Image (tube, rainbow, N blue to C red; front, side, top):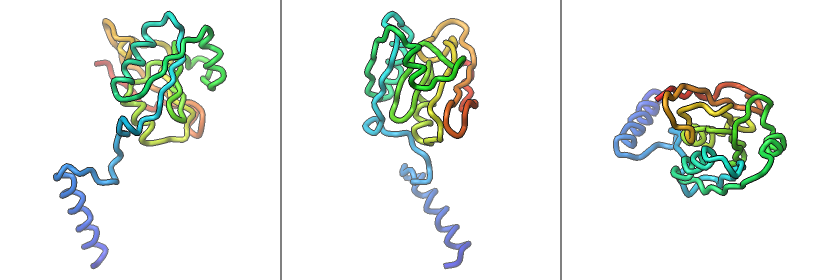
Length: 160
């Protein structure tokens, strides 16, 4: 079989599998809920938006443990959240630190792609982000921090 005919056969097989509902291994898949790492969320005991964000990721299958702490800033320093990139809560999910109101779809993308970063952050508390639903939602950015990518935009989230 020549290179061209084997490539054609491979592409044909790819499309047959795709049409049959089988996702070929070349296509990145979201982790199944049973494969999701546990999430530990550090938050102020009086913060309602933190609890709503935890509910947001739990609805996607993450096993969430809430830890009320009196000094969330200390946790942020210990986990390496850069100055000016903080929010109201900090989570540890698998090998990553998730700061603030990061959407679950972006966390799933992170776990699928596994980039060389310490974690993701949504600085501040943008209206329209998970846990911060409200009037006049706005677009916002999710940033990486630490690791090879440093602080860079990982994903732009449009206003709904």
